Amino acid sequence: MTVVSIFKLALFFTLTSTLVTISLQQEQPLLLNSAEQDSVYQVLSSINSATNWRTLFPDDLCSYPPHGVVCDYFTDPTTKNVTVHVTELSFGYVSDFTPNPSCSPNSTFSPLLFTSFKHLRKLFFYQCFTQTQAFVPDIPTTFGSSLEELVFINNRAFVGPLSSITGNFTSLRRLVLSGNGIHGAIPNAIGDLANIEEITLSRNKLSGKVSVNLSKLKKLKILDLSGNGFHGNVPSSVGNLTHLLKLDLSSNGFSGKIPESLSNLQALDFLDLSFNRFGNFGVPLFLAAMTRLKEVHLSGNLLGGEIPEIWGNLGGILGIGFSNMGLVGEIPASMGLHLRNLCYLGLDNNKLNGKVPEEFGFLEFVNEINLENNNLSGRLPFSANFTAKFGEKLRLKGNPELCVDEKLSHRESVGELKKCSKPEIPNPVLFIGVSHSGLLSSSSSFLVLLLFWGLWILLA
Image (cartoon, rainbow, N blue to C red):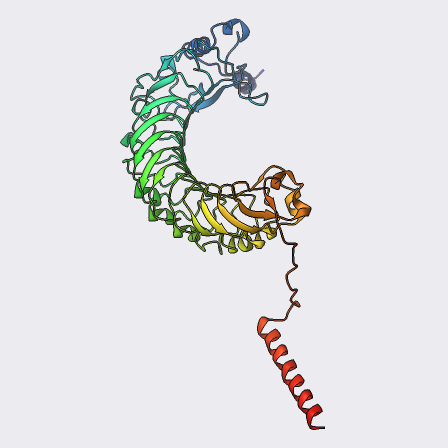
């Protein structure tokens, strides 16, 4: 065998060995490092100590994880080494479609969550801290640069100030803290979350004035502060959130005038300012310009005044809540003409008078109308077919002067109304395509002909 042949053979075996090594490396899965794996076990035990997690999931927790534990691969930009780390932790059974590890009544909050998972993107707790108090821990400044979603829902025993939760979350997109024991004011740090798309802080024990400047939150689409104890004026900077789709400030103590700056929210489709203490400034006229609105709720604020004629460009509205607002005057017929997609209308507990507009009969999709406790009068203009689709969701009681025809009196939804004393007289039918001026012109011509005919008889 020549030297060249020996060299070729050696080169062949070297290449073959290298390829086999690479192939084996590629087939061998990357494992979670032991320290991070142990931290996951400890966190799982803190939320449900009755389960032996190490026995139930003895293998690598990234390769064979329980539902709710998610990992991802990371490449070091300098060494090009690839490692695997935990990126999502979700706890609390939501449904069969998201069977996260269930929490026990005595769940505790492990501080390892904010120290051991430097690559964490999502942290989710649903109904985990319900009996034993779990206090919001101090979050190290070194944690949170990768966190994108922080979600705590219905954890009434999870208590602490909101200022302790907002850390160095420069990548945060969703902050959802709903139905917990979080208290205090909204810290100014909230206004620096430049990448945030949702802030939901509903049903907590938050209080004070909302003085934080929201102008930097250019990506925000959902702002929900409902069910807290906020007071004072709504900051005008809310009007700078031009990508906002949902604004819910209901069930607080906001007062003063609803800011005109909200008219800048041209993308908004859900507005709920109900059950606050806004002053007697009337229904905001700027609603007419918010043409993408699907729902508007102002109930429980004594705004007063009449229902304005603002409905011409709001044909996409599905729900209107104007209950207990001190409204006076008549219900505009234009609501029936323009709001053709309306499903819900609440005008109860006001001081509205006059007749129920016949034009409401054009509302093809409406399935609930509440006109209770007003001063409405006259005959209910709805047909039997129209009232049949409501069931108990046509609410009319508390209007002593409102009456119903005999043929509708047996309907459960109108059973409390008195029967009209006079039979219904059908409205005159106008020919389609003939204007009122045309009818008047025809009548005048007929009278002139009749006059000439009479004169001809007399002179004949």
